Length: 110
Image (cartoon, rainbow, N blue to C red; front, side, top):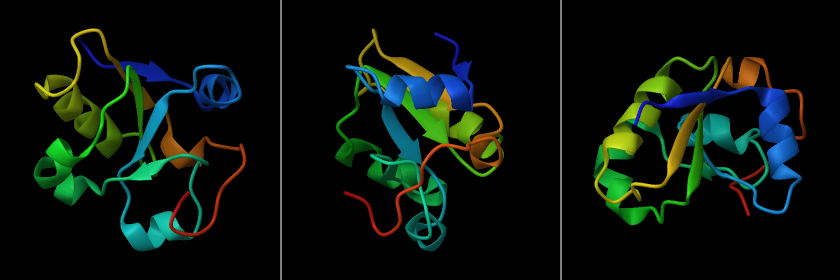
């Protein structure tokens, strides 16, 4: 299934809904620690292939990077991964953090 796109506005609304998507932030851990989308899991792109088995993949996955380019590649990799359900929806955040105006969480995550 081809990877789709989601806007920052759509993602923010879904995060406030009853079934929020799983957000995967592929930026470097230092950048992630300075601010990330609440609930986002940090799986840096350079380590994604090594760590892909360690992640419990959800039914809707949104991949995020600074501008939406490398996250598109990461989303395609995740979508092709056999550990992701055939029913899962994998999306790229269009424009990445450059388009995100929602809240940010500081630190290493939840």
